[in-house]
Image (cartoon, rainbow, N blue to C red):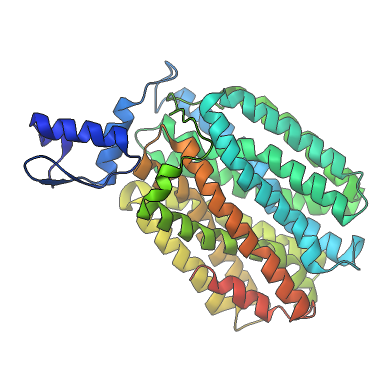
Length: 435
C-alpha cells in the first residue's frame, strides 16, 4: 500500500489536502491520475500534523502523565458514582421505597446516565470553545450540589431531579473532558494511556460501591450522599488545573456536526455503541437485588458483585488499552462486544447459581471495561485528535439512545413478566443486546 510520504506528485498532494479540509473522514480517495487508498491511521497522522498545539508542554512527557492522572480522578468520581448506583437501587427497592416499582426506581440511575450522555453533546461543543479546566471545575461543583441536595430528598421524584438530572448534567463535563483529552497527549502508547485514564471509572465504581454500601449501613442514605457529594466535588476540583488540551480544538459553529452523520461508517459505529451501552448497566443495576431475591444472599454480598465487576472492568480497560496499540482498537471493540454477549448468554441465562453468577461478573466486567476503554481510541484513529471532543459529544447521542433501550425495558420486564422475583426475561433481554 502506498504511504503519504511516497506520494510525490503535486496533484495527489493537493487532492489529499483538499479532502482533509472538506471531509471529516476519508478512507478511500482518488487522485487525478490513478486511484489511491489510504488507511485511517495514515489519515490521522496527517490530520494531527495540521493541528496547532495549544501548549508548549511536550507529548509523552511527565506533564502528559499528570494529565492522565487528572482524567483518571475526574472519571473515577463522575462515572464511578454512576456505576455504583446499583447499591442505591438495591436500597431504594428493598428498604426505602418498597412500594415503588423496580422500573420507576431504576429511572433515577437511568436519568443520571441519560442526562450525562445528552449533556455530553453540549459539553463537547463547550470544550472546543472554552477552557476545559474551567468546565471540569464547574462540573465538579454541580456534582457536589446534586448529591448534597439529594440527601434531603424523601421521594423518588425528588431524587430523579437531584441524584438523576442535576448530577448527570454536572458529570457530563468531566465525562467528555476525561475521555477526549488523554489521546491528545500521547503519540506512543496512546491506547495504554487512554486505558489508564478510563480505568478511573472502573476503579471508582469498585471502591464507590463498597464505600456507598458501608456508608448507608453506618450513617444512613442521606449522610452517605452528603459525604459522596463533598468528596467528589473537592477531588475533581483539585485535579481540574491539569485537565487541559494539548491541541487547539476544531471550533465548529454548531453544537452537533451533522456532516459526520453522512458517513456510513460513522453511522454504523454509532449504532454499535447504542447496543453496547444498552447492555452496559443492566448487570450493574440488577445483580445486587438478583443476589438477594434469587440466590438468597445478603445485601452486602450483592453489592460485592458490583464491586467485583467494576474491578474486572479495570483489568479490561488496561489490558485492552495495551493491546489496542498492537492489534488495532476496532478489532478489540468487536472482540469484547462478542465476549460480553457470550458471558451473559452462556453463564447467566441458563443458570441461577452462585458460581455461574461470579463467572458472569468476571467475564462481563472484563469485556465491558474493554469496550469503554477502546471507544475513544477508535474515534481518535478514525477522525483525528483535534475534533475528538465534538466527536465524542456526538457519540453520546448513541449513549443516550442506548440508555433508553437498556435499563428501563429490563426493569419493566422484571416488574411485568417476572413479578419482581423472576429475572429470566430481563436477563434474556440484556443478553441479546450486544448480539
